[in-house]
Image (cartoon, rainbow, N blue to C red; front, side, top):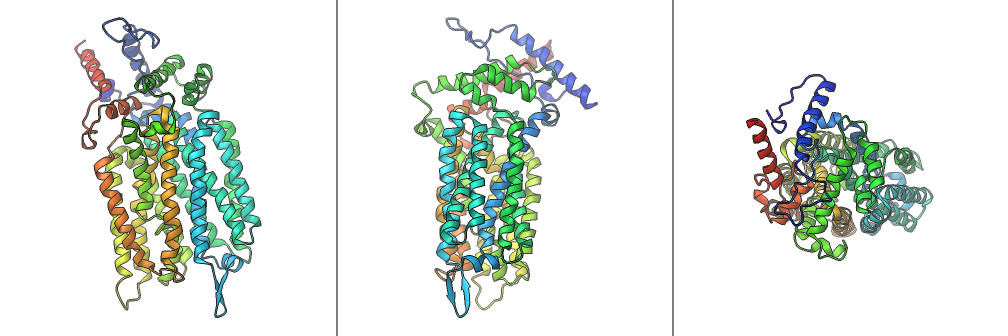
Length: 556
């Protein structure tokens, strides 16, 4: 039985790992004896030398998680940054319902009671989205120039400045500046962390490890809900702000532990540094040949350069040329569906709607929703690789769309006091649908689809476009909800039902399934302009070659 058919039996961890590696290395070296190194591409000869191939390329996921344990740990540690992201996303929409925050920042008073100006409430999240755009567009530039680790250090400094401003803020303008820095830092995180993970993770683990970003994001949202639940006293709203120092503090030692990605050094033509990074991550693995693995990555880079040789440089305009335009669209759409599906309407204002429905403790209800969200994200680790990206994306997107419609309908029925339990149930279903679909999968497509040479720029551009739409939705949603403006309340769900319907249709026709594909496979599929519906069953040259080698091995 061939390795691709799973011929290694489950015995002890050590023996199964060594047997698998030894067998595949033997086969691989027999293959290499017939070929030359990457530098000799068979020019002037009738046949082109086969590309170098890693002996770990077809390792099953469970074995890969055990063999590449150090990479897994590094990915999980880097994804920790998403806690800050989730925490900062939760605070603006929920803190506006905090009594002590209202006392400090209220400017609209009538009949002895004061309230926040709806325009400022919209600006709090809108300005944060502006900061995200700055980070998402500027982050890839500094990432390509100075490295992924440089961006991690920079976002830590920027987030620290934001926390300081939040602590000293006593007026709405200062709070707005604080939100700008918070958005700037999260924008850098969103454009850097998925790229870092995708560049060090083995392709068979890439989807699950990218999902850890969304898991920690959910942990951050859960922590934000808990922090607001326990916030008490006149300065109670500052307690969640102080908590951010814990997350920032953990990021500092992580920076010293993790290495720069090999891909960054390869793109900079620094082979020794790239090999040093690869040796740090995987050097302890039996049978891991650093020189061979470097040639594999370098071959992919040179292949991409040959495919785009007519381009003078990898600028932002190249994102829209040829197959890259399609890849940029696919990188963007699943992540954008978070906003189209009602993220700013449901998750950002959960506490507000629970108050409106008469839920006795709206902050506790928010904690329940965040707990469900975290549970769904944990389940998604398994589902993404088991069932694929596309089915989960479409099924979850359908659930979000229907819940937007249901929320709008219950708010339209005249002379009916909406039961608080019904509102909580609808929000829980929407949250589960979101957290098991576009929440984790959006970041998978963001990091996976683009060609490696343009990965940082594609991720930054796609995330920035998402933030642009976020500016509109985050600013307008409070105005649509507030009685100071449109006063649509629950009926705002009709708007997001329409936007989610359009987004779902677009995903159905344009977003393909890419489970288990290497970057080399994706390059070939997109260059061949394979239709969306035919992605799963289309076999690449690499797959056909592996099947031929397997057949030859069985005959021998």
